[in-house]
Image (cartoon, rainbow, N blue to C red):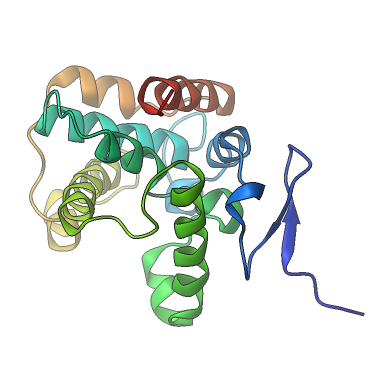
Amino acid sequence: MTARAWQRMRSGRRLDLLDPSPLDIEIDDIAHGLARVARWNGQTGGAHIFSVAQHTLLVDAILRHRVANSPDRRLRLAVLLHDAPEYVIGDMITPFKAVIGDAYRVVEQRLLAAIHVRFGLPAALPAEITRLIKSADRAAAYLEATRLAGFKPAEAGRFFGRPPALPAPIERDYLTPWTAAQAQSRYLKRFAEVAPK
């Protein structure tokens, strides 16, 4: 029996994990998957999982707050896609990534490059865009860790840095877990706002 290295998507597309083609990537599949993948291995408070889709929109909100009115379309789109490979491979927690080594990262990077190309971004982003997204991602992780995943502030600070200063509406809206349908709908709405027409 031959090992299968592809996944059938809700759209019907078949995505090869070893050699992903941009032609097999659809935003509806990404939104559907990310809205159903739990951050923190599901070890969060709330009536619903805290999904990768919701996390992505939190990172986006943090970045918009930090670089208000950025005209850089690549940044606005790249932040929405920064965890997009997880619609296929799940959100593996950092400690487990350390255990399994580089194999996960190789697959993740191939998928991310194909996703970028599919939506008109360079396969590898400029360093400045990557730096801005990583900084906002760490800020989101701090908030999620302390508000949802049971970390004490000092412990979260050791892993994710200082707590971000954000307006109360961002924390109030983005840190109450949404249903999968809400996360998917809000993700697609934001994508429609930033994607090239």
